[in-house]
Length: 144
Image (tube, rainbow, N blue to C red; front, side, top):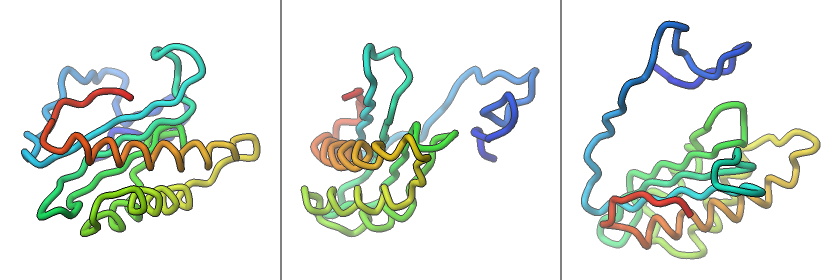
């Protein structure tokens, strides 16, 4: 099932007596690149105004098995499957990252006072994709 939910006084599907004690992600492919970017006003502990997570594989010089998630674009983190589908099979580079970022922001619906986030997410998505490509083969995730 899904962990995140949008309910009154709850952001997860956990029952009041349930607690997550661990997460066991699958072992990444050796050709995996991943990156996380977070834009905030003050310190790293502050809530993000916007964040982006990207994981992708490179195979024969092309992107495959990509995952792209936006945080603070909706009440819960959202996967941008249209941008993932666009990335898969493409050669990595600035133009590809820019096009994926454009697709990603089309999937968002900012509220009136959050319109500025469109430009923010466009820049974060592009940067995070390019960083994930640079980190291909280094599976340690670091925050930008």
